[in-house]
Image (cartoon, rainbow, N blue to C red; front, side):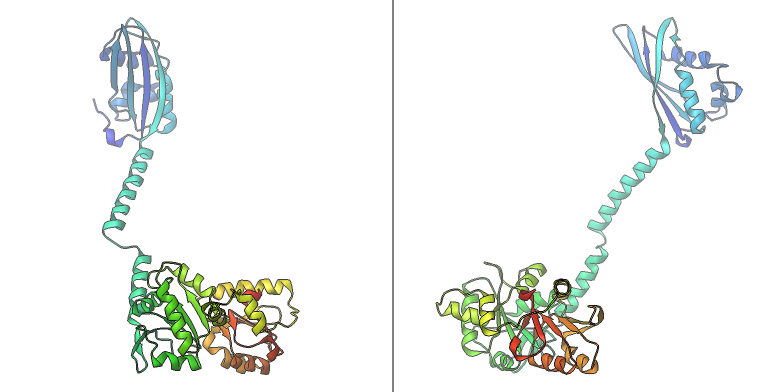
Length: 396
């Protein structure tokens, strides 16, 4: 008799059997073939289906206890799903096996292909995890590693003191001064290139010279040593802003999120000097009000919200948005190219939002081009020194 191979079956019929008495496997097999004979017609005759390889070997597993027999019947099928469930339903018509009453109930019809598919999926997950963990790095990891290596290669030596620095010190209007080489590397790794290190406890002449022509922001560790460096720098150089790493942390170890959060919360050096000299604490906004009295702003609420969102988007990019009178972005340029861009656009520019500090050069160029608003992180120009509305992050 030809028999179907188990691996070619598409479905498996699982049937529970309960018998009020003691029987053997041949009794069950005989009842299956005998009591379904002629029930479903010639096309679905079990003996013929098994002979043609459409039904596989019928497995019967029995367990006899206290005079009763329970078990499971397993029938592999390569018929279609409709014919397979008809065979299963036919088994439930069997009421006696041997001399005993019996009850058969189909528990489930299993789709073998689904089981195989589930196995393939689970096994594929295991193999992928093994491949990812032990063989190949993630594509993003490769990108990050290459980008980090490139940034590490960008560290240079600047000035006669040969200070560790990023490649954008000369071209940037604002410079970030850190304590050592490791701090420079961490900022470079996170995309900040306008950075230079003191490289010691004494303030180098290179830093003093830079402070005379650049906007200097000091970024120090969040410890006692950082406070001492701030005090030393404010005594010998023209520092504009101060940033401290989170308490107890060093600049070289903080994350990208912590770096940009610190950059956004920098403090004017006037406030730091007051604290160093033992004067009462004055918040940064109070100092700004005294140093740069504000004009009455005619800014609409919706425009203020647009400016704030754009300024948040630009944080850390060193970029600038050029806007028309409907607050539409005409273009985006690097902060270092704001002045030449304004000079080339003699009209049509309503506002400029940029990640940087408003300087006199930017204001003068903006006035000539009839710009209405300049929006930036901070400003070195007093509002009453220009007809242009100057807005900073704290104003928004």
